[in-house]
Length: 228
Length: 250
Image 1: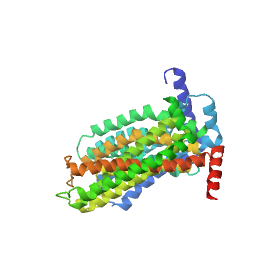
Image 2: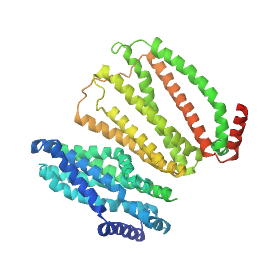
Image 3: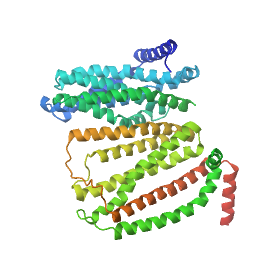
Image 4: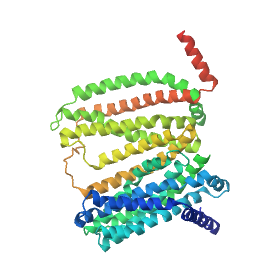
């Protein structure tokens, strides 16, 4: 599908538009990131301030926080575009909806996945993770958050324009994120206990490939249904 | 072939066709359930380890099988909705989703009741239990989405897309949960993985499963038929049907 340069530039324009719009106009950018940091700093209060205790849970804690923050970010994907009519204009303009779906997922990853990965560095270090495990955590977060963005975009497209879209997105999306959580958290904890985390990372990469190939179709079909 | 499907996927034809089908289905269902209950509760021998409490298997296992089967049926309806835009499939999808959720819940609850005397605990984070729990949430997601969208047709199409994403995800969830489980903990409970089940125990189990399937079909038909009446309420044949049934009452 995406073979000629024309489609690549369309994809680039769509992503750039989304990123710039959110960057310049709204506080939507901040919410998922703040949510991620806040959830993470809740855990030391709940569990224990001892670094030894926190260290053993660090991978799982950061993964849960990242998962929740990314689910929260899904609401913003289509909200302003839908209410302003821009989404309809894009659909009517004849741009392949596959590209729109893919562009939305990439923009979501740039706006919420990437900041979360960057912020995970100081947070993980403060939880007492060592450098090797940190690199594995970041690698698994990178692969996993991209998959989350792709699946999440399809889910977000299903609830475009609904009243309780935010909560509905989270409830619909979380069951689909369980495999990603398992492989991501296990990879990190394996690297901490000296086991080899390669297999889990390969699984995450495999899930990403599967998501790239399948979810744009689901997103396109969902947009068509919601606006049809 | 296509003519056949076209004929019976028309709501009106399906309504009258299923009306004739239901009494026959109920008769077969009653015969099967009585036979299976007799086999399960009386003629099957008690298990030499678990005694009589193993008999919950006759509810638990058919429910668990049905929970997957109903999701597959939803998947088939979802494909028909998205590819051929069959109205009957839209109605079917929304009608059977709650039934599937109930079967899943039944499998979880009976498993839990069975687990208490056998494993000594109501719940174990075992791979199969956990993926069944995730399946329940996939069902609830489909139901939530159907409820959130006011327009029936859009709702059914959206739910179809969600259902198909779920179909791709079920094996992934299942195997990832197994992976997680084997890494986290060894087999702390001795499970009864004995595929060699006595024939006297097996036959009622199989007939019970068929009875469950029939039960599912009968209940779905009732739900689909009433949904058809609601869906087609503005058409002449439904109005005729209502006036004639009123006349009979007088």
